[in-house]
Amino acid sequence: MITALVMAGGSGQRMRSSGMPVAKPLVPVLGVSLLERNVHALLRAGVRRIIVAVPASLPGVAAFVYGRLTALTRAAGAEVVCFVEDKPLGNIGCAGLFRNETQDLLVVYADNLTTLDLRMIAAEHTANGADMTIATHKQHFHMPFGEVRIEDGDVRAYVEKPTYSYDVCSAVSVLGPAALAALPCDRPTGISSLVQSLIDHGRRVRSVPHAAPWIDVNDAASIPLAEALIAAHQCDVDLWSADPGEPQGLLCEITGNRVCLSLLPREADDPFMIFDDLDDESSRIRRFSVECCCMEQPLPATPANNALSPLAERIFAFARHTREAA
Image (tube, rainbow, N blue to C red; front, side, top):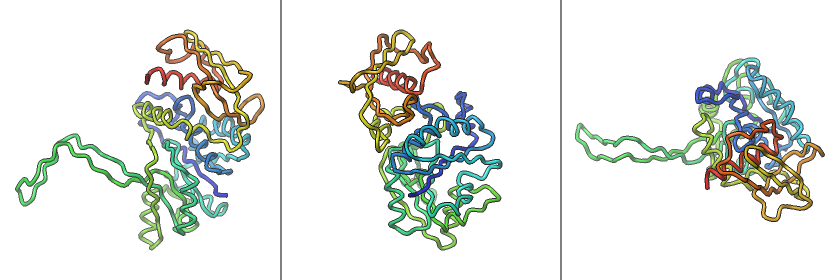
């Protein structure tokens, strides 16, 4: 079984400067942090050992790993390990520290969200025999100006605000033994430098192209786009448990600016949302089907009883997003 590494570092300067008060890995997207959503994706792919790399400068992220994520992964039959970087090693450098613990290492980044099948990426890496495999997709860039094409001083074409497509890395990769060994442990290394170094030394790097929804969440402006992605593909991202048992019905009543959750004796007849999550009372993963009663429109930005459980917080966030999108 492959081991996974979640890179949850970076300064998050753009996120902070755009007004977000928490560390980037803990920024909520529809009530669930970026970091936890990446852990959900790894659990959905069958990964049972997850390492989260956290810089020493973000103790709140480490506390989240030791607390919430430890309980979540234990209930899912998996293990999470928190690796605290005392000195920055770049956006992939610390992967080399685990070269003696695993044959291959699946690497994802906490500030990216996607519906990409990570199990498929790992399988492709095994099948193609490459030293490193990276997921790639087409990214479209719209030029905000007219492009003038010139040859020998003469204008040959004038194209108004063209769009170009490029193959880009989806920030999902699998590193084999040679790639892990190529990482120096005493200085920072970026993923682009690692790929180029492998190529320069005659090593094989393979691309796995895909068309799955993908987003890089780096500032406050990208959060609504990430929420729209999650809402449009909720079953792909929120139903991640291999053994959730019988669905537990929940009734969520939102009156004014207060949120109240109560158990239903049955699965919701017409569920507003369905998701897998940790049931704090039983300490196991449950599938929740939710009926929602919202008495006012629009919903407030935050509920009055703002010390909500994780379940209530994500239901409220989803309800608010749905109302705003309607």
